[in-house]
Image (cartoon, rainbow over all chains, first blue to last red; front, side, top):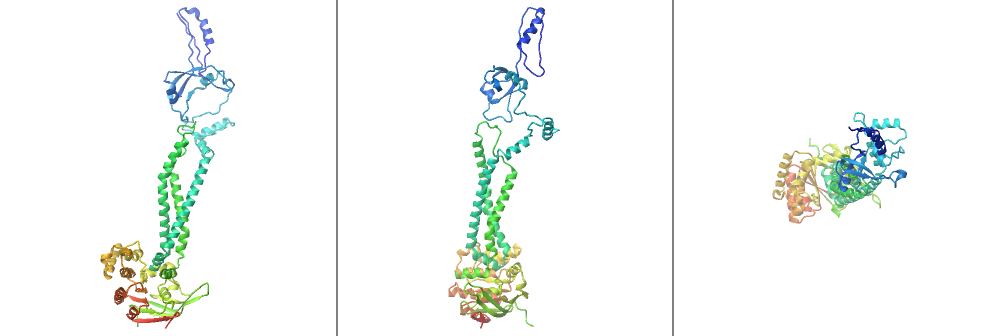
Length: 302
Length: 224
């Protein structure tokens, strides 16, 4: 004969060995053949880096020592069974990460449960959507800071990445200003060297707007050629800077500082067109006001 | 009843404001150019010959007086309309040729036709015809820097005739050329006039002026 006694915490909490021993004592009369206690520990998932470092595989045992709150230095190690090896979405590039259930986590922390958490991740139902989930949690727990992924990213864009935005803005503004000065100077010099030709074209019957539009085209070609070359140049620079910035420690592995967005190309084209128009403005005024006869006289005399 | 004039100027004055005081380049000049007429204007430097030519060509506006081109009062036209009038009705020949240096002879002659939106086939036919007319078919693909002075002026004459103008205005067309080449250009201008185009030539060249049907002398901004 034999008997088996057991305890199952549906919440996944730990079972004290002393309790199992006392239960075993109660049924000891059923047979003397043998006796033993088995308490399975918490289960968890580990990232590939940790699995590789400690040669872990599903089913392996992983001993974790907690560093939790006031008991940071005195906690015994807890054995955890590895259920799987996974890639976590926000894992850092050098992080050794393990994940377990809340009861498992409490066990690692020797059941210290202050009821506090720094971060809670909540999955919303697809049919409800993240915004509805955020609103619902806010209603239930007004004291929590609740964000959807989109809101969090937007917040990061506006605050944490504003430094990069400011640098980009300043660099772009300086570049555009010098492009504007350079093209304006080039076109002005070019117009001044071609005053005779332009006066002849006007004398032959070319309309004022035709000459001015030709000048605008020249400006667009100059700035546009630079802008076109800037696209691959900018892409290579962004890749290079991204690689440098991503060497910073503890960054999520999938985080990138430079991400291609089609609207950036549209903005680029718009800025180029505006720069070309502004750069051509002064030489265009020179051309538009060109006195035909006086210029022809001057060309003959000179 | 005589044919209406190609251009008729009445009581033209032109005063240039200068820092040292206004300078009167033209004082009350009246002139009528009839179709197929050949007029030479000569006189000392600074007497207002070129100013008169610029006024007749609608590239300058008079201080007072009126100009009628093909019966239309130029003063009432907008800048775009004056441009159109120059393009379609007036041909210019300059002392320094003023060909566009980056274009070939062919392209220089084709340019005014393109601006007038002449169909490509007609442009090609007209350009070929004009280069043959001035004897430069073989130099069609040459740029101005590859042509002699006389050849450049012949291309300039072909360009002036491109849109079949009723009036060609030539400002010292032989001024940059040696005597022999100048004579060739004068012969060419004779042919242009003989083919029915009114011609006004401003020149110091007595031999060229002598070819005109009517010779006008100018002094101090007035017709003598």
